[in-house]
Length: 260
Image: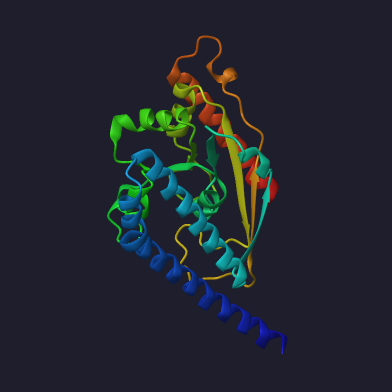
């Protein structure tokens, strides 16, 4: 009987995960063809329109997370959420699962992010990312300056320094781009440690490969990491970014081990 119930629970989570992602796709399409065109008509000021579009996306992502929790796919805990009640934050997080972005965008006000160029051409995501004015990662040399400008405008910029999800072996390898933004923009870092037990929706995993029980997410917003130490002693921006990247590499690796 216990094995039968376990199998039923597994089958239900597969169906519930599929239903959740189907709802995500349909919701993105509806935002593109109905909600955001109406927003363009009603709100002419570009800055106000972008702010409202981002607020709509935040609510939509909260609904998506709530749907997955309500269907029994996952549970989540957010630690240190009060640290997000500020503006102009440079939020750097590790990236174990497919839905890390959704989680952070759902709970961070005035969130901005760097979006892969491919999402600008995806029919389910093109509408939201264009309406919200997110930063396109195809902008080349202007990318860092656009990120700094967003922070100066009071937005909270979310970046995953790995550039992609953590590989299946769990080895975290950071790129230097996020550190360049922190150093050149003279911004402290707000680190976020994300863990998922048992792991699901990891890099290379099919969405239907669900774990034997619901996934428990823990999202810990940690104390800021100041950059003064890294830019001291007359260090060039290149050297400071290298130092900060190595520090963040160690920070996220140790954080992952503590959550294991």
